[in-house]
Image (cartoon, rainbow, N blue to C red; front, side):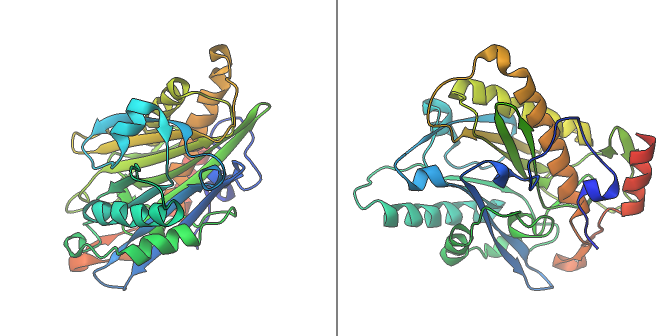
Amino acid sequence: MQKRVRELGVVPGHLPTGPLNAITDVPGVRVGHTTLDDGADLHTGVTAIVPDALAGDRSELPAAVAVGNGYGKLVGSTQVDELGVLETPIVLTATLSVFRAADALLTWLLDRDPAAVSLNPVVGETNDSFLSDIRRRPITEQHVLAALGNATAGLPDEGCVGAGTGTSALGFKAGIGTSSRVMATGVVGVLVQANFSGVLRVLGTPVEAPPSDREPAGNSCMIVVGTDLPLESRQLSRVARRAIFAMGSVGSDYAPGSGDYAIAFSTSPGGRLPDKQLKPVFQATMESVEEALLNSLTMARTVTGYRGNTRHAVPHDLVRAAARRG
């Protein structure tokens, strides 16, 4: 049975979580999934992170992108970097489906703004080809629209769902994970699509995966950080870099073929947090990313997929044992 890491006695960091311990603890942020799992060759999907402010009277939110290693296809990232704003929901999917997902997100946006002649859809990806027949490019417009349409403010599903259906990390089956931290000034929430290599660490203690014939292709990670704190783009860039730093706490080896990206955005309607108050924000981000990545593993199940490849779920007894030693 899948369990979140706190249910296994693993408590990363010191700051308190939000009530859901999820990115949806940030007011006005919703998450939706579409999962494609045929029990054989297809294990993939779509995850949508939807800030409600963009559907209201605001056309953009302060945002930033950080690149740990740019071996990836993050559609729309250069305009976010150039202008410091997010214009659209963030969609995550598989590598070869990212372009169809971007076109579908554009359809969703055009339907809502009949006067628009320029929009910047933001779509990230990781490579799930070890467990899914990625060349089939099975993601359609309807899959993307469904994920956007079913997005809710409740606790998002984790593990083998949505864009994490076929992903692996640190030698184990992984997927989608989420977490949050609450400070006196606001909330930081994180959602990850975990698909990278290295040796799993639980509170600093290594947990070795069983020997495997080969690492899963891709070795990437998408991290989305949302907050209701009044942060400008420059500050969000600093936050996004800390999100990538936090991958090291769970054992990432930052492989040269890895596309490691973080997107950070703020839903605050105005104001600016002084730079000298950013330290707890950085701490909240790194703690949330660490826990979200661990949740992506402990909430996943063993999957046998394309060409009979299998990726095993991390044994919970090993996680508990590592936590006791950590």
